[in-house]
Image (tube, rainbow, N blue to C red; front, top):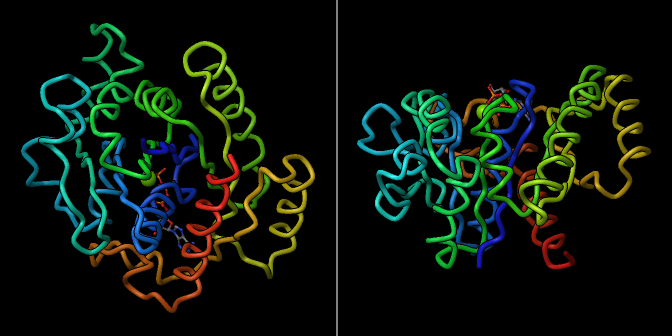
Length: 256
Ligand code: ATP
Ligand code: MG
């Protein structure tokens, strides 16, 4: 059975998609069978995996509404060597349409359960909101990976996310836990980055991943080639960091 993880942070542009895509590719390189679920109408994870979001006949939207099974909708990322449950702007309508449905927080969980045996890991790239879509991600997952930039406002948003995770754990999904906080887009020359990073370690202890992802332009360039950064330029500092992160995740899972 697959281990299922959400990459979540309601703040926008903090590196969720970059983390989800590169972790998927990094785990695939470690011979893990991976499904990447794009749960964001922006479809960035889909594009970053080299799949054209504009020409898809069916997406995660159809899965959430019960119109298709994941097995019929998933695609393979040729560049990343993992499967993708793709998304595009159709998904923006799902929030409203799901209000009418039974069991609406658990639609994704139920759909993933039907293909769980095909994978070692399912990674869910959440949108930048604590919405019904993110709630579906949190209900489906065993754990949450929280990417964050080491800046002052990062800590403020974190308490809302941690509270939401606590509520979901208490009411909807007792399996759910925080796997770890991942420091991303890190710039060691900035004193503030160092300070916030130290604060995170103080507050969250070993919930902070040891691996730190540096700010690295190759990671930002890769999506325009439809490639994960770890494939686009494996020797870059950013790619190397995500490879180490993949290994740290595998280690953490074994000790869970
Ligand atoms: P959203 O909330 O809109 O979904 P996100 O949290 O998924 O955003 P990303 O799309 O991964 O964030 O990253 C935001 C921007 O920062 C992108 O342009 C991405 O290429 C860039 N980026 C992410 N990580 C890094 C990094 N380590 N170094 C340099 N650029 C990065
Ligand atoms: Mg994103």
